[in-house]
Image 1 (tube, rainbow, N blue to C red):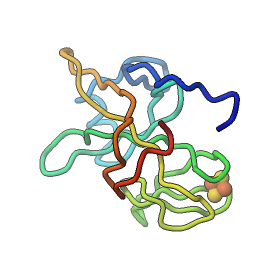
Image 2 (image 1 turned 135 degrees about the horizontal axis):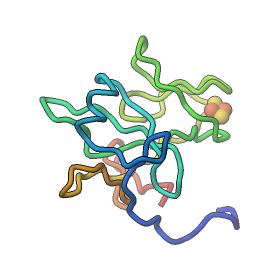
Image 3 (image 1 turned 180 degrees about the horizontal axis):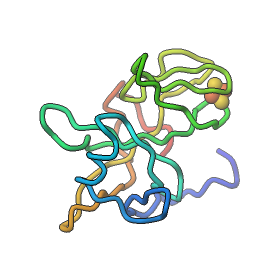
Image 4 (image 1 turned 180 degrees about the vertical axis):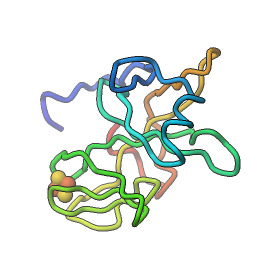
Length: 139
Ligand code: FES
């Protein structure tokens, strides 16, 4: 859309914590205490890693934290189990699907996998959005 947007898919990166250290999965599990937690991800953008389900340590997708309305950082609210944007009140469910506007779209996805040394690696999600079957608007 905008001329400032890169058209190339972002390069895979190892997620970094707020001190720019690589995120190791077991440390992340302990620190995040079963809640979505922010890391530095693709293109240096903030991403939420998500707690695993059914005994898994971490979900195999991450959510870009940028609200799809005007780009504020959506906050995870553990009380209501949603991401809530502080700017104009948009809400997203725990998988990042938009459930209340003005945000027009769901949070962008990235793939999550572990490296051989158990670091959390993010890579571009260019396939269909599994949440609603649409083409990925962010790719
Ligand atoms: Fe998030 Fe407006 S920027 S609701």
